[in-house]
Image (cartoon, rainbow, N blue to C red; front, side, top):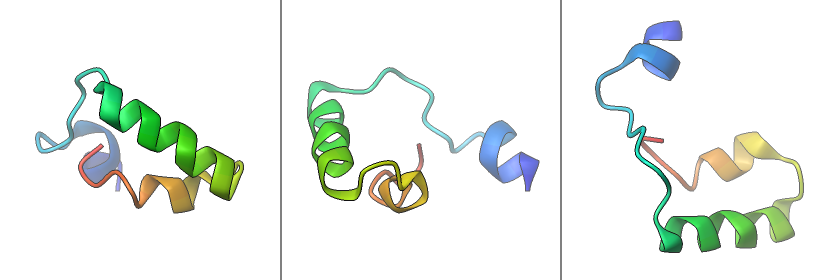
Length: 45
């Protein structure tokens, strides 16, 4: 599991784009601190 979540080469580790950042803020307004739900909106992150 650690390989897929932290070490996998397909994980995008670049800074969030402006669009992604806005999507994150919007998702947080909708879902609050339900980070598992929010993370589904960002596959590969």
